[in-house]
Length: 318
Image 1 (cartoon, rainbow, N blue to C red):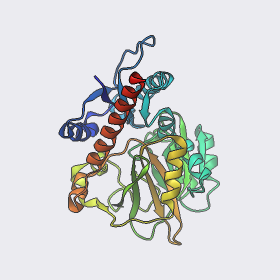
Image 2: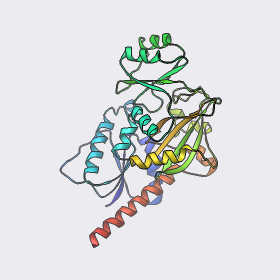
Image 3: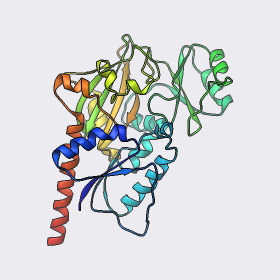
Image 4: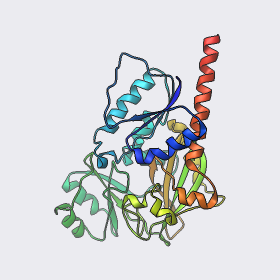
């Protein structure tokens, strides 16, 4: 039977989507990438495939899930399967270096950033900044590795100390610290490659999320975290010059579902610092304005499945 195949590694994050699909009566299959066995000599099952693999999977005991997902996506695409967020989306999800190059290609401003491999390179990169700077993991998610430093000496103490945690891919980013006039960032959500809504995120109780004054660190501050509902406020009639550039980037890279995060400095300059192709939504924030990201996503996936079934039937008839 033709179905929507959900490729992921986090049941907690994916359960709201499963429920939205179930409520619509849409057939779906749970493809959890924590383990797997792929027969390369067989063709994929019928349907459409939605990839929502996360860059932070290794923090949940799924160190090689992204690599396995890459193999699955290569197999699917080699057979001409319809993949929403294909291998190119996974490539961007797993590398902020790749994200920044993609953003810059569309004229989107990103913070000045150095990619460093090894202790000496990290320290050397820090010396390129006159003021405050941050470190973060290249392969991240959940704000992994984000630390604020006001001097190279402070960074050296951190890198040489027991608290230093390298990125899972070995690449540490050293980045200009963007000082925002107010403690918030903006997250812009897209479904079907088109703007769904934007969210103002209060960052006043933590740091490890973005290059802002203070950003959220723990899972409690993830958009899907119920306890963090008041930290997320959906912006009414969001209109920004970045939106068409984001949409053009998604179209270029064949990405259907994603979120972008940007911060605005004291001079009104916007800096985009993250593309998230495994996006989640905050139900409490949505309830206040009576919208549902997961319902919108479920409707999009169901529509894609219907179109795929229709095209298949037309080919058979021909």
